[in-house]
Every structure is written in C-alpha cells, then in structure tokens.
Image (cartoon, rainbow, N blue to C red; front, side):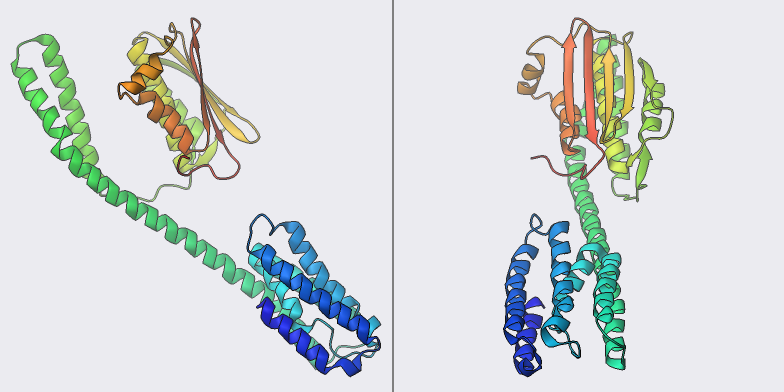
Length: 362
C-alpha cells in the first residue's frame, strides 16, 4: 500500500507541477516522502524497529508534508502535497494500536489539513470523513483478526494436547496399569505384610491412573485466572505434613495455567519433604507478591540434601526435582533456587507477572 500511494504522489505532483509557487521545494518534499517510504517499509518488517518512536515519526512526516503545502504551493492550494500518501501512517497506527490508534492518527491528520484552509468544501469534508471512519474501522478489524488468530492457536493447542493425552493413555493402559494390577494380585496373595502394603499402594495408584484415563478425553475450558493464595492454602490443608502457609491475605490472581503449575511445583516440594525427611517433618510455605513477580518459598526443618544427591538421582532417572520442580518453573519462564544445608532445605520459586509466562523450555 505504501508503494502504491508513493507512486501516486509522484505522478500527481508531476502532473500538477504548474501549481507550485516553489517547484524545487516541492520536488524536495516529494523526494523526502519517497525516501521515508523506503525506510518505513524496511522498519515495518521488524518488531525491533517498529517502535513507538518510529510510529510517531511516521505520523509526524505526514503532518509536516501537509503543513508545508501552503508555503510551497501558495495559500490558494486545492490539494496537499502528500495527498493519499498519508494513508501509510494512518493505517500503520490502526494496525499497531487498533481502533484507538486509527482514531488518533485520523484526528491529527484531519485537524492539520483543515487548519490550513480558509473554508471547508464538500471535497474536503468527504476526505476528512473517510479518514475519521477509515482509521478506526481498519484498527477494529485488525484487533478482531488478532483475537481470532489467538483463539485459533489456543484451539489448536487444546486439540494437540488432547491427541497427546490419548496416545499417552494407551501407553499407560498397555504397560503401567497391567504391571500395577499384577503387583496388587501377587502382593496380596504373598502373605508378607510389607509386600501386602505395597500391593495396596499399587492398587490405589492403579485406580487413580484409571480415573485419569477415563477423564482424559474430556476437555473443559479452564477459568482465565485462578487465585494462587487460595490454591496454596488449600494445598497446605490437604497435605499429610504439618504445613504453615503464609499469604498476603488477599487474592493473588494469576493465569490459570501459571497458578496451577506453580501450586503443583509447591506440592512436589512438600512431597519430597514427606518422602525424605519423614511424615513428622514440618514445612513452611510463604507467598510474596513483588512488582514484577510472585515468589513462593518452601522450607522444611530437615537435615538438608546431601551434596551430589540431586545429580545422582538425575543419573538414575529419578526426575522429581528436575521435572516436577525445575522443569515446571522453566516452562513458566521462572526460576527455582535451592538452598540446603544443616538448617534444612528451602526452595524459592519465582514466576514473572509481566510479559509471557508460558512457553516451551529453551
């Protein structure tokens, strides 16, 4: 579009060259518009160059080209030098800032044009009217298209996730569930109390997995936001450990996926305390809300993690810490910091609240 209106401004100004009081100045203005068009096309292809400063300069060039028209053409001019060339800046604002940007740019261009004229005729009114409705309409359409694209991408992700859940469910059913059922049957018949207890646990896990498989085909729409403070307080109440949870006392809304994954990471920390320190251990969970992130600290009163234990667990294929805690925080764009020693173990889980908080791990 910028190329088309630039060709148009060159052709029209050559055709109307006799209307200039200062033709060489008019040539210089047209040349400047052509040069700016080349830069604008290049800048528009990169998000790093397509900054608010560039957008402001783009509109300022259009306004300046209109403003110098009476000086170069004379006070009795009919058409401004840029003419339809100003559409480039107008539509750029509409695309970038949607209907509000289109409305602001249209108002600035219209006021500049009308201030320079002695009166408003039907042609001038028609041009201003088109600017004032065209900018907001194009901006509204761009906003709608972007929203539709986001909804389409979300639907595609949900469909892909459902397909992957189905595949995993088949693998779990054909392998893990069969083994758990076998362990339950043989363990119960062994007569050994310890093995019978393991068989009971295996049976419980089999029922949980079967329930998950039955539910995996049901895709529901989760709320846009969830209260992280409420999730942590509920987690502390339900957990087998003695857990003291401290929150700000007010809701801490986060995107549903972020809040759920962060609460699940805290649950993994508490599960590790129960497994490695013992059921009589105490744990403390502290939620802090900072200007640009939320931080959850999980501390216990155990003896700490022996040096090299996490590395050896990873080599053995035990992925509790690397996936359930660090992996989750990495997926959220956050960090999981571990402090351990004779004083106990403390995890500090931090997730940013500004900018993207979800996405694949690097």
